[in-house]
Length: 478
Image (cartoon, rainbow, N blue to C red; front, side):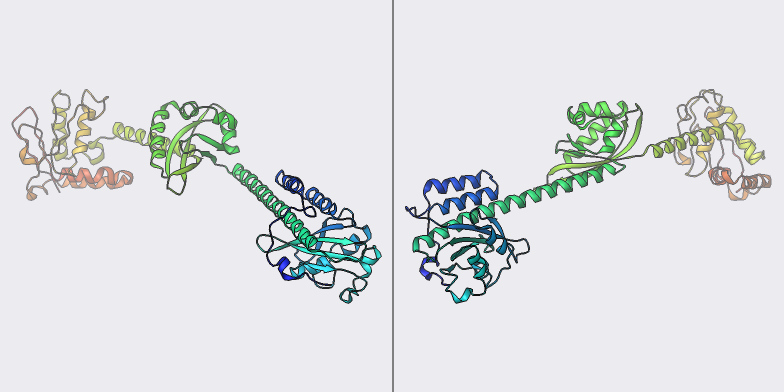
């Protein structure tokens, strides 16, 4: 075994087209096959035949390093004897296991001129000699990243030393094969990555489709790009139907008419800001019913901070909305029932001070006069206003349509109904009023809402008519 002199291989020389080297037509044909995506096996087989045609009796082979990085596998060996291929396929990379195994191990060309006489190959020579091979050369195929990709081998049925041109020829062949192998590796890697992406997208799509929420993806302007199965099932539409109309037409079609203008305005403002936002609206289902949903919009931002797209989810809140409406209606009904069924004399009794107040109210309630109720905050003005309203001719109208509730200092009012505080020594004169007030404690559900305001009121106010300049002073208990 011998290696060529260093000058011939130290620096790969550019391809020189000679009669004994690759022709430009043959080189272009090989490169064309590589660039057009021909399978690696076909490309390598074509290169082998091309190289073999430059020398009579030359038998070429191409090994590729296996996935484990430890063994060599034949990729192409059209004319190599079958017995030798079987004996050397899958050989372990390392010294003494054949020229190709040695070349891959040493990362240098290996030339065996005569297996019979070369003492370095005594333990290996039976394999080539049994196939009629007496000489073998091999050149490592090294990629751009320095990794050994395989080997290019040449065998002869007679002892033979390589000429300078043949050394150059095997070097050229190894470079072309390296281009083909690296392109195939890149293509396979891209395909695997693409398949993995598709698999991941499919798995993600399945995961999103399993979500109970409505999920959809919008472009930066708000047009639908994708929608999950839950959304398509709810609307009863295909993704093409979701994408086939403009945003305004789709929203007008799918949202409640009463919500359309508001949602259009709020949605446009949210997308223009480019920040996360939420909307509550009623969306039309395939059953023809509108249901309340909470929509959340989240932008996926680009490097410049602008949205590349929008991810949106919608959670049904129909039960919550219906509960809110029922609570509102029940509160209104309860307030109306309390207003209809409760009067102050029934709650606190019929003490003289209270009867005096109700008497004054009874005088002004039937009239068409405007009533002004004044006093300090928390003295029961709202209760008096409500009583006057319910005893008036306009009790069927909203309570403050015919009553002006003005908050003034009690000293600023003239010729009006005045509620003002009397001296503390007068407040203890009617013990029955205090006794009646205490009865309210039995009405636990009304204690805070009615008892306290009435107590403050009875302890601080008196009345006089809007139509009279006379004041009706009352002494009320604390």
